Length: 274
Image: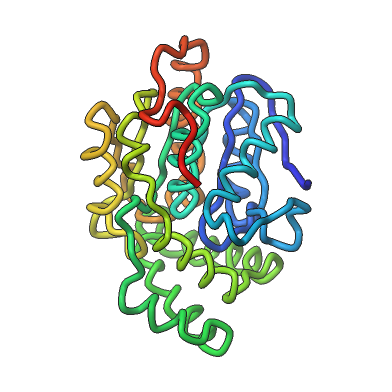
């Protein structure tokens, strides 16, 4: 299994979004590694991941991948941070393996109630054929890039990120399959029993054009104890458009809870249904 493990200090596991590639998060990985030990990877069904994947297990196969990564790196407990689609994986992992989680961070995460919208449903009909439309649709992120970086630096950042994307190309077919997996996932009951320290990070509602902030905030309904933070001048891409601010926020939360004693457990006793 191909695991990125850099930095020193309290461990933070960073789970990528629906595109599946850890490389898209590189600015956040580099910034976090200045404060803590960062462990990340590409999702298990990515050809570059080197991990095993069981399609019949759906999202739970990604949950198992996180457990395998912790075992491989000999980390008994870590802060688990999931980004967008990876946020739901992080939440499900916490329900199934509460003893392995010191704290949970959800960044612009989709909630268990998420369903593909009309645009996503259309693209999922023929993901490879319609992938040019997906790429064109990515231009909707430009306003948040310019808000975070300014116009000229933002344009340079967008070009650099586009180069990263093309060098580490996403699979439209795999993205469509991952979206369908969520519709088959029934995890909210297990999540209701999770009591670990939880940080929910969003961008500004007017700037997140991918996962509406209101959807991510649904986690506060499930977990009233969760702390909510807005990363200003960002939308969905805050971890890479303002990586230093994101890193300080996550690392501080990880440090605060690194030595927490586990006195809670999930409603299912840490054994979420597959």
